[in-house]
Length: 227
Image (cartoon, rainbow, N blue to C red; front, side):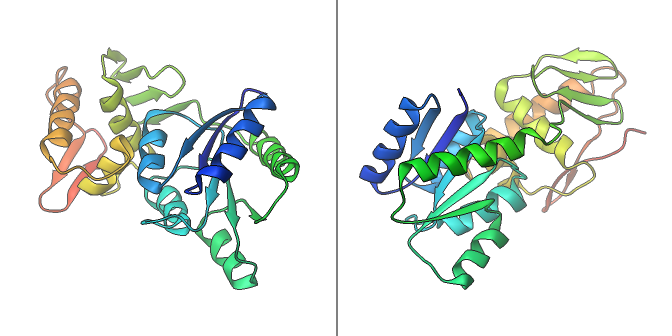
């Protein structure tokens, strides 16, 4: 199978059981005990599916799903786990961005069947291999970016930053949104984001001096059309 599955579950025994079962069935699982670790892993790796517990400590599974869908624009299928059985709870989960819902306690075989169904559904969708806005484009598969047909040398973090702008062209993005997209969580040191923005601006302005990356003072940053 080789599909990469992120398990976000604070109960260590449940998480271990899912991890071991999926490993034995040919999946490639990783595990996070809370939303913060999950966001870090999602910033560093690409997963094919997320198994997400609703009742996480700190940021809940519901809030994490909303953050992934609405702020980070992550479309990875989400299978939500919960002990809550009311229609209102299920409706809240689907509204937050869950693709399926599994009630605890559950059999690991049923979990596998639901994962397989979601992966089949996702495989039928067209995956955008290249992002482009004006003369700026990014090959998502290789991570190679081009500006005015000139190849750019980007660090992994700067590539994630560029990808975030290309997914949201002509859209104001706050510092927090950019930091979550690149590092998985807001950063205490604002210089980190500033350094990568400076590097990206330098690369985009090196040919004709006109950079499409604009600062909206006091609010955030925006990728705009090149004049």
